[in-house]
Length: 317
Ligand SMILES: *[C@@H]1O[C@H](CO)[C@@H](O)[C@H](O)[C@H]1NC(C)=O
Ligand SMILES: *[C@@H]1O[C@H](CO)[C@@H](O)[C@H](O)[C@H]1NC(C)=O
Ligand SMILES: *[C@@H]1O[C@H](CO)[C@@H](O)[C@H](O)[C@H]1NC(C)=O
Image (cartoon, rainbow, N blue to C red; front, side, top):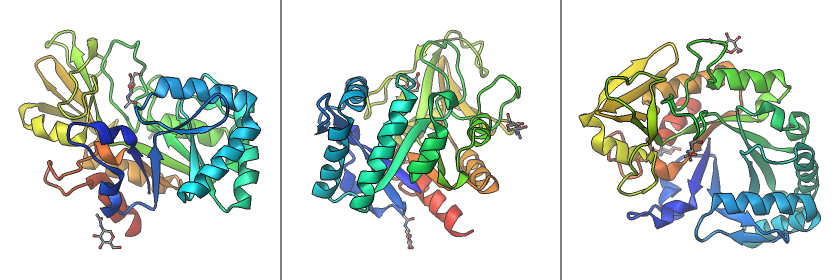
């Protein structure tokens, strides 16, 4: 049970700090919010900037990888982390350079007994050297949600487990199957699920099925203030005003009110994904992120419900 904490949560109106997640029962915690500079130095991102981070990171992998490998090792020891996760969820990088970097980092981290994880975007199988990642990474965290791009102007489920029309809709199953077919080692793959809601504004309140036209992201939440996204606790505060529609063939649920449209996991859809993990003998689950889950029991099922559910589910087996 690999749980993410996004350091942006420390700057929300009601913040969630890293110390707040210590009551959860995850086996691994990933602190999301460390970047690198073009010179190959590590930087703690105070005001988080993903775009900037990615650009600098590519530069560092290409030109300063020896320096970066060493900076990572020094940083892990300095702050007493157990390991590092390399976040490569975009496609704008050279897969061979990434494989070489992971290989070098692996050798260096053996010397100090630290772990190495790589997070990848599930739908871009071709963008990775899967054989190398399977060899050198201790974990491959497959982020299998939010498949549609910002340029798509239709509403879509956040993470359908199965495709309703098998050959064209991207699903958790279609992506996991592709990774397995490409030779990834099952026992290194954690299937990462999202705790947040993705929200849209419908073009018309007469068309609200999956695939209906959208004019863009829904309004930002009062605490997270990010258009197109609501934390679980923000969703629970408004959920009673919404009509819900669930679909058992794709294992999804969506919610609508007027022109507002929301897609989020439910306990049922999560449990079906957990079952899928066991059925396919994957290593485990990832939870992205703890701070976007129900941090303060707003929904009434207990704080940090997703990690608790995973804990109950996977430790009872
Ligand atoms: C989900 O995908 C959209 C479109 O690509 C993007 O704008 C948004 O930031 C993503 N949400 C998260 C939480 O990654
Ligand atoms: C899962 O995906 C594979 C590959 O696309 C497909 O053959 C299989 O039928 C899918 N399973 C279900 C239950 O849809
Ligand atoms: C964590 O696990 C312990 C048992 O190891 C259990 O007593 C506790 O309730 C769990 N906490 C959560 C938040 O699930």
